[in-house]
Length: 293
Image (cartoon, rainbow, N blue to C red; front, top):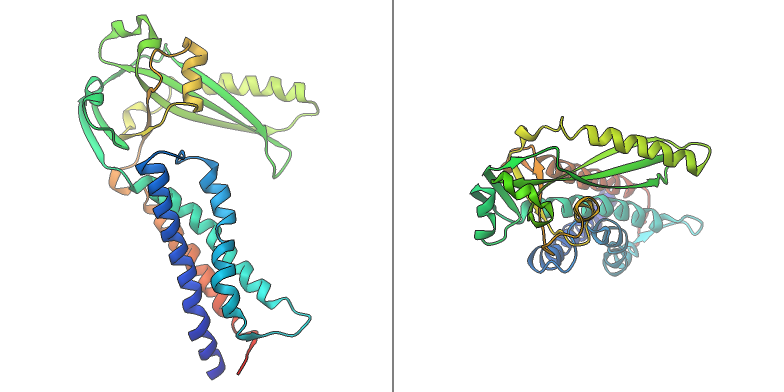
């Protein structure tokens, strides 16, 4: 027991330092590159794939690897690799969740009386808009589909945009409208025998998604999250349906149905759960090796 206590005192703080310091570094980088300067799109795979999977290698090599030299393993056992693996697979989901929390928490909520006043205020991440109209007969859409890497299935994503306005005459030329209500629909199906059959099924599902435009819970929208429009699928939805927009930077507003203060509550719970599970597994693994004197 004395040996385990010594191992725990030397290794468990190291595990927590790696997790907490890594998350702080990621959050600061996210704020600097995606929130403050918009150099990298907050929703980019750079954060959820590149950073989440590659960044953990740095603290594992610089901090954990030297500490594991204190533990004694049998020559044929890859014990150190197991400790690296547990820490690595704790960091990956923790980074993904932290990026989601940072994306949700950074940025204030601006309340405007009508949609036409939105550009009169400094740009913020979130908006509460009291008065606006949507005509569901005018909509743009763009779809994308791909094969699921985990099985023989197909994922279909449909990006839908609807003009937001105060004056119905603005719809005379939708290309001139700056404000767009944007949301995504997702469908999936088991892949068919041929690519052509898959393509036919995709088009059927796209048509089904477009029917949801009239059924979407618009009245449940509590606030909007503004996204950068250029090169997004939502911008392509406007462009594909109405032609190239007059404005290069559209105001794309994604509706949120949760209370603003609760927008990332579940994510915090998942982050605590992820770190706790990693900590427990790491602690139990310390029962296995001996400690060099």
